[in-house]
Length: 120
Image (cartoon, rainbow, N blue to C red; front, top):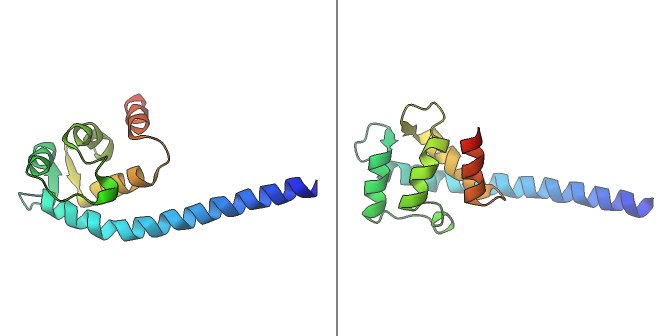
């Protein structure tokens, strides 16, 4: 019984440490994502549309190393709808930053996240 209690306690500490690590990582990521948003916002109107994003990605906008797998022309088109919380066809800085942060910190593959969004 003592071994089981120790294992449960250890698992709980692991979960707490993972949560703390993810919080720190998200906090570090947000300024970079905000800068990236401003670079994508070619019209400087505080929101980005899908065509702005695709055009800037084609032009070779700098993408942080840990997001290169997510910010590709093919994937960003698919993810745009998932990030567009209010479904107005545009992403605000908050929608963009929060969407990419969640994506970068989750443990499931991008494809699974896309399928879950489509099912919802």
